[in-house]
Amino acid sequence: MEVRAVAKHIRISPHKLRPIVSLIRNKRVDEAVNLLRVCPKANKAFVLTVLNSAIANAKENSDVADPDELVVSQAFVDEGRTLKRFIPRARGRATSIRKRSAHITIILSEQEK
Image (cartoon, rainbow, N blue to C red; front, side, top):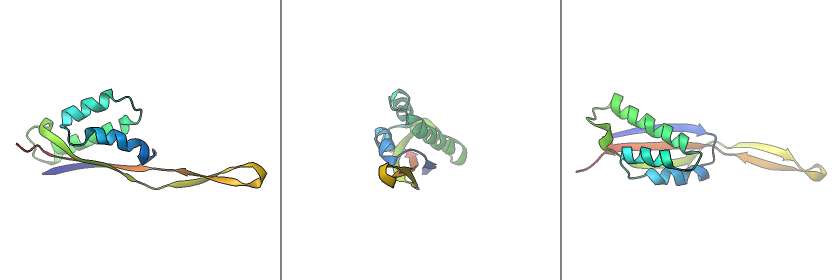
C-alpha cells in the first residue's frame, strides 16, 4: 500500500530542494517531520507541507491503522517549468535569467516488520 502527495510548480530551484528531501528518505514519518522542523534551511516549509499532505492522504484515503507507522519510501524532486527572462546589460546586450521551478513528490508506504 502506497500513499503519495505531489506539489507542482514550486518556484524554487530543484538544486536547493534536493538536499532537504534526501534527509527524510527512508525515515519513519514522525522522525521525518521532526527532522524537517529542526532543519536550518528556509525551503524546508515546502517539503514539510507535502509530507503533511501525504500523511493526511494516508489517514483519509486509505485504511491505515496508525499513520505513524508509515515510512517515506520514496521522496524526490523533479525539474518543472523554467521561466526565461532577460536583463539588459551594457552596450545594448542582454543576459538571460532562468527562473526554475520544481515538482516535489513524496511516497509513503507501510513499514515492513
